[in-house]
Image 1 (cartoon, rainbow, N blue to C red):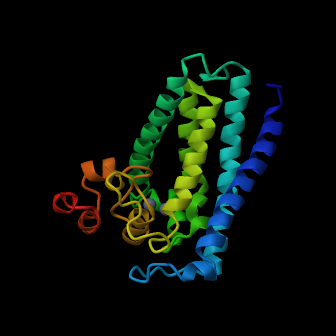
Image 2 (cartoon, rainbow, N blue to C red):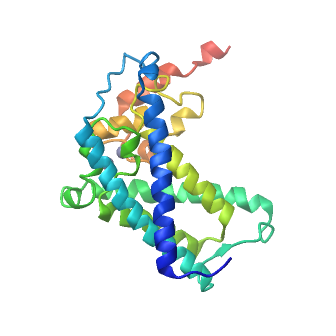
Length: 258
Ligand SMILES: [Zn+2]
Ligand SMILES: [Zn+2]
C-alpha cells in the first residue's frame, strides 16, 4: 500500500464516506418512499414521514458525522502505515476461517459497545449533548441512519479505532463490517411500515433488530437500545413487552409447525 499523508487520507475518506451515505441512504429513500412503494406499504402501522426541514437536519448531522469518521479512518490508515495497528493484508495469515470469525466477533463487540453507550446517551445530563440530534426524527427515514451529534459520532468512531488496535483484522473483514454497519443502519431507519410487518420475523428474527424494533426506540426512548441484535435488550429488560408479544404472534407456533 502506497504511503500518503494524514491530510490526504482525511480528505479522500471524507469523500468516500459521504458518497457512501448519499448513495445508500438516497437509494433506500428513493425506493421505499417513492409513490411506487406507497402501493405496498403496511397501512396498519402508520408512519408519518418527517418534513423536509427534519430530513435536512438529518443530512447536515450526517455530513458532520462523515467528517468525524473520516478523521478516525485516516488515523487508522496512518497508524497502519506506521505498523501500529493489528490490521493485516495477507488473508492466509490466520487462516480463511478467521476472516469469518473475526467478522462475527466485531459485530458482537460493536453491538455491546453500542448498547451500553446508547443507554448512557439517554441519561438526561448526556442526552442534549450527545444524542438529541439523532432523535430529532421521531419518524426516522434512511437519512437518519448516519445522523449523529458530533460527540456521539466521536464515541461511535472510537469503537472502530479501538478495535483495530486490539483484534487482528484483515482489510476485507473491515470492509465487510463497514458495509454491514451501513446497510443495517439504513434498514433500521426505514420506518416500520416499509417492509413486511415486524421484518425480520423468521425464527432468527427475534434475535435480530429491524425497522419495527428501532422505530419503537425513536417513539419511546426508554426501550430498544441495541444495534444489530436484541440480545442485550432482552437480557437487561429493555425490550418492549408489546413488541415481544407481537413478534411471537408472527412466528409459527409449535402447532403450526406440526
Ligand atoms: Zn435511530
Ligand atoms: Zn436513542
